[in-house]
Image (cartoon, rainbow, N blue to C red; front, side):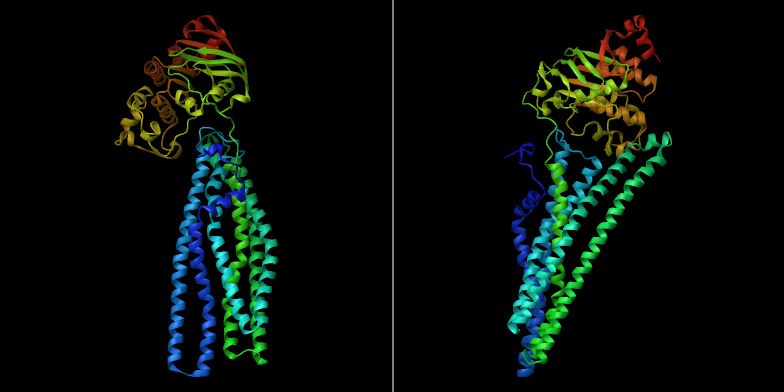
Length: 566
């Protein structure tokens, strides 16, 4: 069995083939039932023609009763075959769309990120609208085949009455499809561009929601709205363009179908007037000319839906075939491992060297915030090892030689802007429900007042992005989640910037106590956390320029004192 990362890349056409292949059973049954439906629909005018023919010839009540019974059988067949056929196809369609949504989500949630040049909002659109439209191919193919059945049955029935009528249907159908195939290609290309623009608009909305509070804070909400309006207008204009093409397509299809039906009707009338077909055959031909409009309309619309499904599949392929940003190794570090950074050069880091022994609590005071962010990104493997100079070692093993699962298990980097999810306090602290240190983490992060404030305690509901929590509460909740993970090496990036000085002092002592005996690195300028650390490393201009305890540095280093004193 192949893993998601080692599967063969799948372009859009391959995705469609995969969807068709694993739904072949449902599609076979659906095609049979929908073919039966279309055959029944087409048989109705044929039966009417035969009834007229026999009624005029035999004038028998028994023959009339038999004809009525035959019509009842046809109507029942049409009703049941449609009902059960669509049930089979729509179930398969819905299931297939679910599979692709899960597949896209799986790619986004894998430990190894993929090299996808798409924003989260765009991926969301791909996982919803594009997945649904790709799965529509499950319904499109059976409906296309069943419509073809109806056209062929009509052509054969008309051909038995007169060969010219049958040929007229066949030639007219080929001409209609040839004309519409050109327009369907334009629809496919336009739909792909429309989905891309809608996805960009969705990504812009997601960005604005994340930054809504700071935007209001400095009055940038109006500029942000203008930015979104521009992106949304582009999506609207493209949607209008696609709608115009769709309108032209639908109008052309309807007009051509009507012309063909009129041609069949007029030709049949001319043949009947000349005595070349009977009155019953004329009734059949006129009835078929009317009934054939529906399958012809359905048949002529299918190429459009095929192109839309393919366009959506191509967009899904952007995610599913994207290569991983790094190829992790198979190694696993020992428990309680030390952390070593050896001559790392990335962003603002300049041949950075430092070593944190197993069980040590080290604080890094970065004079430039960018340097702290770059270091956190490197340690979190957000930057692949091949993208920077130097090496990072965990337990003596290079980061590039370790599996991502092993890195995540032994080394946790908690960002300063940790995301808060909709759920409860408990599910945010312990998402997997397996942590044994939730109470200790809550106490160490000083989240106890938030828990005590609500009758539900840890089961208190948290809104999306922690909208019902203050900034300090969200930050403490994120810290509690990091502490509850209880990893061998924990890296905290500015964990107390949104809390008051008294709470910050208590958190610093609690974290040092809870993490005693395990490796902890804190990127911070907080005097409380710096004082709680075993030693402090000063990170200035991308390199370590000083090393000592917080109090010694305050006494001997004026630059340090100016940078961290509050």
